[in-house]
Length: 144
Image 1: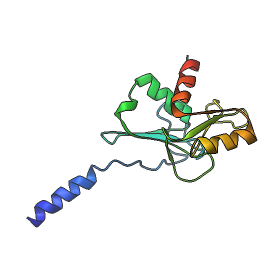
Image 2 (image 1 turned 180 degrees about the vertical axis):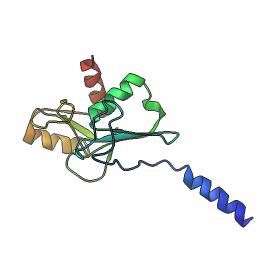
Image 3 (image 1 turned 90 degrees about the vertical axis):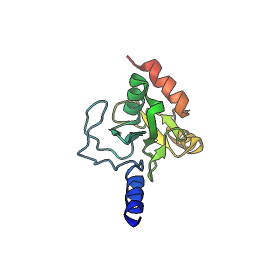
Image 4 (image 1 turned 120 degrees about the vertical axis):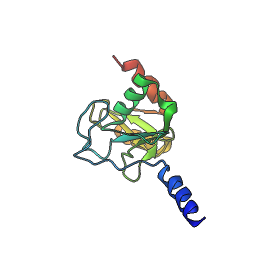
């Protein structure tokens, strides 16, 4: 009985879905294949089966999801907080596109903890604030 309980608990924890840390300077962006070096712009997602995908910029993440139409297959979609701190749930973050904040892929896109934080950054940096849904629509319209 003790053995069975141990096996069940081990398998339960082995199936836990969590994001693995990005190895900056080593991991490659799944979309553009650039080496991921900038902590302020990196992003990642984890499928419902636990497969990890890392990106050097939120714009690569958005383009990958749009290209493959697989956002519903993700258990988590995370973006780096430009202001620092832990990664953010992409759907709850606020986004700023400002020509004063250059991102790795040239979309001038940065993510913040929420819409209010993005709006504060917009007051300082200029640009336009977006929700996750509005950002996806904007980048899709610009996609080749």
